Amino acid sequence: MDSNTLPVAVIGAGPVGLAAAAHLLERGLEPVIFEAGSSAGAAVDQWRHIRLFSPWRFNIDAAALRLLEGTGWVPPRPTAVPFGGELVDNYLAPLAALPSIASRLVAGARVSAVTRQGMDKAHTQGRDSAAFVVRVEHADGQTRDHTVAAVIDASGTWSTRNPLGDSGLPARGEMAAGHAISPPLPDVNGRDRDAFAGRRVLVVGAGHSAANTLINLAELAKSSPDTRVIWAVRGSSEAKAYGGGDADGLPARGQLGARLRRLVEAGRIELHTGFGIAALQGCAAGTSVEARDGRTVAADIIVPCTGFRPDLEMLREIRLDLDPAVEAPSELGPLIDPEFHSCGTVAPHGAKVLAHPDKNFFIVGMKSYGRAPTFLLATGYEQVRSVAAALAGDHTAADTVHLELPETGVCSPGARTRCDAPLPEPSTC
Image 1 (tube, rainbow, N blue to C red):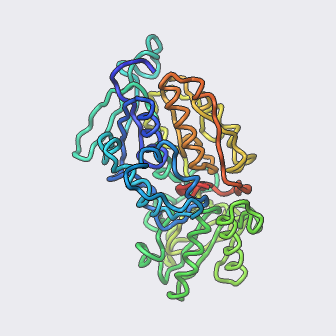
Image 2: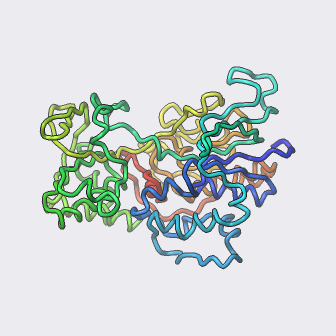
Image 3: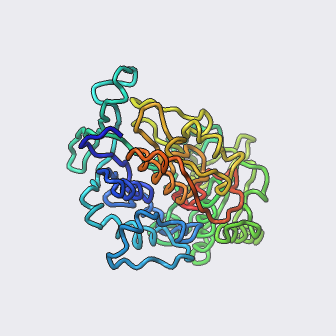
């Protein structure tokens, strides 16, 4: 990175964004962290009732740990598997409260655009030496432009879910039926219980998010017997809908699939396979959901567990090089394509693979995986370690990538959710 006094913008104060800030500080670089939510880990906090797949030892970044050491912080048991709320309360909140992080964290700051100072996307001459401008909508209602030397986009994908339609587009009538569609990971036995108890609930999609929601709905139905739980998956194989089961390399994930199978076999969950959604229409019985083959299911509320995609609108003035299939950096795309790779088969990668034509701009974390659902927090931590080294000019360290992953099984290709914990849904395998 050019030697100047400008900071490095980190977009997002989730696990990977805060890790990026920690690594930048260790390298003697100055981060400024823009978080759209009211506090660090705001997106994770929305699925605090969901358990991750991987234990604590894979969910804490090394540089962040070094910052926390000596402050009286008590690390969680390494082998315990945390809930999202525990990830926030026991790790992200203490990390964000450290003076070295808190003084550089701007909450309630939503980034709406990134560009090069004084030039649009079509301008080439002098581009690599130009600073970046990050346009931010602040909590006080003001929009301000911040000039920075580099940008690390760790904003994730939580705010941009995939549509219910099976062709990448919203199903016909999906927008009009928005009132009947819940957030991706509702807390059906806690905060959102009243919206689901005694209702016909249709869960659409497979993977971690769907499994957790379905199991929680089945639990809700015990105390509210009028609750009807319906599950629709696009794939035609019932076996694949359950994931790896007892053969899964991650026990916590395998247990979800095994429990789900038992609930379906017991008749507590009504499963519809090969149900690619074509249309939604309001009717006297609630919302009629129509599959491409003409089958219909009536529901009062629909839970979209269809995965996420990156928000690229704010990067329209940045020169990106993206894989045409998964919308990840072009060199990373083939390494993570969910039709061929699972969480544990992705090779370690860093700044060189994540680079874009605009020098000193990087997309990291869940957003770097584009539409692929197989992201791991441990992968994101290694990404930002390498990126920080590259920005500091230590290219040997940036190019020497290594990654210790939990033993993983194959993630279901049909699961448009994060292998990690939703951190898609949001998460870490």
